[in-house]
Length: 200
Picture 1 (cartoon, rainbow, N blue to C red):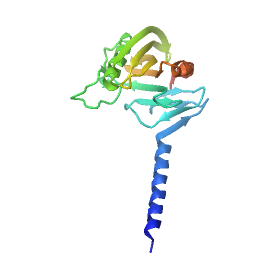
Picture 2 (tube, helix red, strand yellow; picture 1 turned 120 degrees about the vertical axis):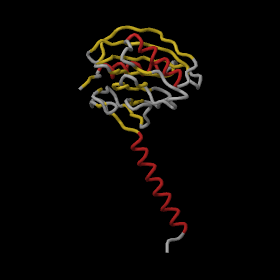
Picture 3 (spheres, helix red, strand yellow; picture 1 turned 180 degrees about the vertical axis):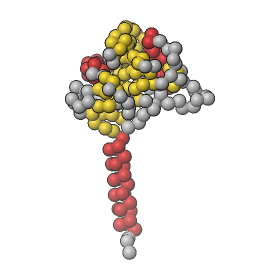
Picture 4 (cartoon, helix red, strand yellow; picture 1 turned 90 degrees about the vertical axis):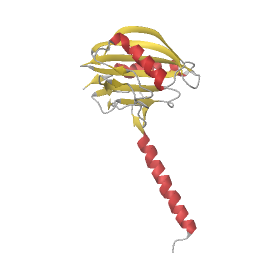
């Protein structure tokens, strides 16, 4: 007959194995030089250094990567947002509806769409668009913009995004990090990654 102490040991061992398996599923390593499909879509990127993909998703068509942890630096991919859909999951469609990407949304309006989404979804206290310029992204006419915002933690962060509307869908990559130290440390890596973005 199994003793109580042995049962407890077996239970703890099984629990630790489950937690280890969950952690393995929660994060995925994207290695330098290996092309990766993003958010179960036709969007691919080839990192110039190793990145960690977070297991949690803020939206059906999203995926988030980080180097040092989500609060220190993160890249979020929005891979083909359909008309009528928000950029991220709505907590409550009735009580807290989010702005939607629509068939009439223009490239010049994408920064405002991200701003309004951030204010509602992240509870950003302030959000300022610093610059907006035309660019080429995914072999299409696109927009690149920079912004500064403050989250609920009152830490000022900077962001940069590239976006394009292709065949009626929105593709966008954003990079965000604390203004002090981490942004300047990683922005070149983000730009190198965004430069490799392609649609298969």
